[in-house]
Image (cartoon, rainbow, N blue to C red; front, side):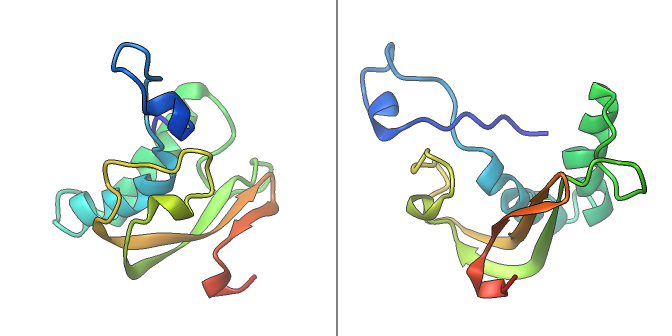
Length: 127
């Protein structure tokens, strides 16, 4: 699971004691986990899926985290071979900054479905 705490530039670029806590986590979680844990052999792709979706759903006791009849269809399609540099200004989220900005990573989310409906797609991959 991830913490996703996007904040505007104004909320972050202030004194340390006044700055909002947290960073964008959702938009970099897949690629960073692929790059740092799967590609290096620390965990398998299957273990990554379990850690990012299956196990959090089990902990919360919700019908998510796997593809099965009767389960909520919140899922993503990814290109695990895509190599690119993180560009925070292109984030879909309101938070347009990241400590990982400019970092080369492998693995990109191409489509996101919420309750079975397409909510995001990377235009480089079509519909």
